[in-house]
Length: 490
Image (cartoon, rainbow, N blue to C red):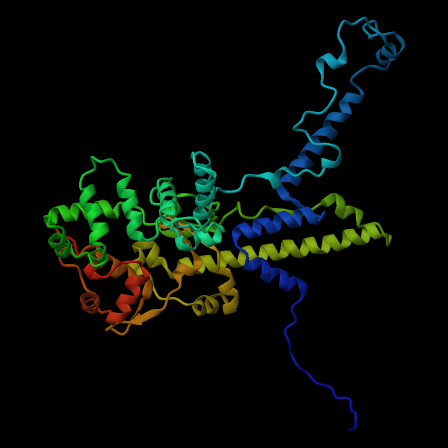
């Protein structure tokens, strides 16, 4: 095969380090971005916070202005006098004392101090972790007076309770798990009932019915309709999902009005008792932009607290002007280039987030004026074409970015939704349809709730063609039960 040399022309996209850094910063959330900025400030000596740098410059200027008059504050002859004349108030080398140093100060470090081999002690590594449900139950177990055998059973039961507070393990397997064949079912159940008396109420239940019964038993005996509610959970629990009040009244031989009152008591219980114990620290949302009303227009502003005003350290930058090739100067040049790239990428990110946020507000003014029902359909392509950006860039900007508005704090992605055609040939946002469904259900009669077919008919009368299964899908996505479960007596 003969070898030849050919010249080809082509185009390809090269991911430079600057572009990779800009893309990475663009897709970070606000909290992750603050962490990234802090790491950059700690690792790059050329970067500094603009506010801290200005404060240091001001302090330096004050010290320079204050140092000059101090040198001439005393006449020369007076200064000489202070040097020549002895100080009558000087302390002699030895004075009679009636106390010793050890009497006032300890000769050794306190027990809580760290020294010597513990110089690397980090107090942040010893912060208390969030309390879990298991910790809460073990704490109550330590306060209980149980025998060693019962405590062993209780610890095994607590380890089988999930984060929601339900017992997921099989009690019949405990003897084999604990290697105690002599354990009986009655002994295990006695320990389980003891754990079920712990806080939060309902913990240690094996199913939802038992969870509700435990909570009802812990209510005061004078609670109205407590016994009837317990009977509903123990005997008529299968009728609860269908809210079949008539069947419950016939089964328990009680008036329907009492059944309704007992059901209200059951609904006030907590089906997930373990959620009352915080197992993880709360996550906070920091908005990237603020949207406010100013006269007759909407103003979009970048949150000034999310990114500090970074700048290049002027003192270190002046050191690079030396025309040598030492390793220190090379390191400074490298840090200077990285600092400039980081500041430029950060500025580009903030500008892109602000542009996308402003365009979303411009296209969704109906939402800000009238609410969800006026939300217009919008996809990523609409923003990309309006701002001359790629759809992937818009997707990165709208992920984990939030805007604070007079109607609440929303993620950018909240304003994007699919569309459905109307009878007039227009388009309606799926978010607006969900809001209409929620509004129709909120205004329905409790005795005759609207079915999915009826809701579809109501929407068709308003010019929105929606199939019944689409209504059911939207209703389930909003966590709204079907009509038979929403039915209530007057």
